[in-house]
Length: 340
Image 1 (cartoon, rainbow, N blue to C red):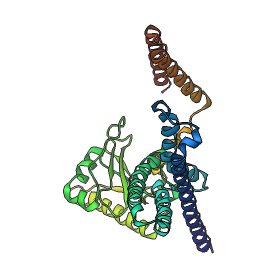
Image 2 (cartoon, one colour):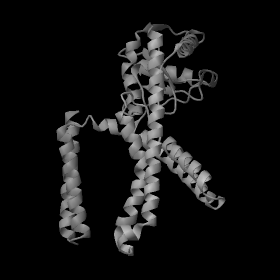
Image 3 (cartoon, rainbow, N blue to C red):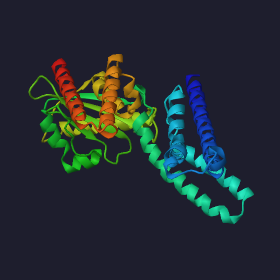
């Protein structure tokens, strides 16, 4: 019964995601069509012929709005859904392209087909670029339950484990890349998947004992816009990789001892991976009211500086405000460092 409920929930989410893609594509097509109508009837709408000084307002702003429409729709619909799964701007663009293609092929002669090719180029290139922007802003959908975690204690230093795992025969068999040393955390290393079947991270952390380390391992299956829920295949893959890792460390000439630890030890590593997948906008939700006041104050002061520099041409006052801004930033950094 639980499996049936889970399957129904997944299918419902998929149908809703497809529906949102088509709704966004229809709105995007309407925005492009409205912009074309605006261009054709611009003199009648504005009431006069445009001069070059009018172009930024009457031409630049509408173009910017049309270009930003897929991104705005993607952010709004993705954030509106109960489960965060990206509505890709590229798909929104392609739905709008399909609408225009059908409309043009039915109603217009072949002379208009070059316009369709230009629209296709714009839809694909601009949509692919907005996909990158959207993923940076929103991140991808991920849940702690999507990860398969293991933690193992080893009677060796992190540096010794690094030397073993970086041997070519082990590194290629485990499909891991070279060790990465996180900034500010000495004697701690992370190995990431290199062309493996599934994504995973090996983290080697020192303990209070001189010759002892903890290896935290997290496996997950990342798709384009989300991390797939863990399944039996992923769990079996993770178990085989961890068992092989322990077999490497325990065989001669290393002869190291490994002890299984609770998977809860991987909590900090899991949180770190999830933060990297969250995107920029969700991070803003963590800013306090005081933090937002500081941001607004900084932007206001920056606006004043630009106003004095470019409009009032008062350069001595501009320099004074710049000095004030720099001093404020220095004091803020010192205060933040003292709190740490």
